[in-house]
Length: 464
Image (cartoon, rainbow, N blue to C red; front, side):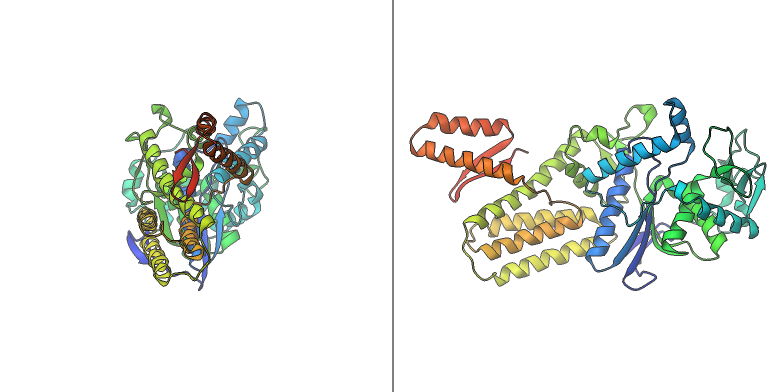
């Protein structure tokens, strides 16, 4: 398997630090609101990568944090006359509601910044004793110029980075490029913790360094997130982690591309900013996941209603293939699995894995699923061997499942009710009661259920 490493700007053979074990950290949300479609992309992509690594035999420990103390949470709490803790609790719960809908699995650990204050203070103390941090008026800053490799992830020299740096009015740091590790308490109502520098709270960047170190160790295999996090967040994580521990922080850095909305960069100021909760009011969650994985993760992706509808149609095509197989199997006889079909399944699995082994190319992997479905439709629909039919059915579902797709289960009670109505319709047709037969068909269509008369009998599917 090869992955594109942002740190080296090239594809590299993936070799974990410990054999058969992967330690992976992915930046999670700041929980002051519902997460938006830009957040959804890394959540879906790196959840799928974790799934694939497990599928090919690695023991994966996957950590995704919650930032539950931040200026945004403090401001939101003031606006709503509530507490930061209540805001965080609300939107952590809402995160899981939307993440579950999108098929995003729980991380091995979901640490919160506020549960790791001691670990954060310890790493800041290390940086201070190592000469990389300094305290000023209750704040603590990291001195970027003391880390000679600062800028190695974003591939920008310090001089270029300095050009865009500034010092806020309320900051007392020595250099514009220095960043806060610890922030003193400004108001008594602001959440704060005791520390060697007085009452305060952690800066944003230090949280992830402390939590990655606590739950995964000094050096981890993969650190991932959106392209927007390369600088300054991930650059600062590297600086503080490596200066505290005198060891590399992460071996592979993976970043997904931006999302544009109707070919324009998503922005609140432009009014083209959508939360996942908004989008799910119109589109099915699996359609959104399928859409996000239909492009290579490093490429920019254009989010538009027309493209989502195209994704929905594509996903339904594969589901129709699965439905056809399930229907065929109900009426087939038992027998030995055809050797050619075994070879067919093995070949598509190989192509699917080769696509994902090449820098996790989910776009190509999904193309393999389409090819597999097309091959099934061409060559399996005339087969009357139940075991052969289920062999391709299981393989198509298995490969889809690696990407968190094609796992939708029909409601059994609903299916039984529909089958009952189909039987009533068939009986009505035998009795030449075509008015009743047509009414049953039209009533089901009004519920989004389409009946199809085939040589093998009547089958049904949901309307696309």
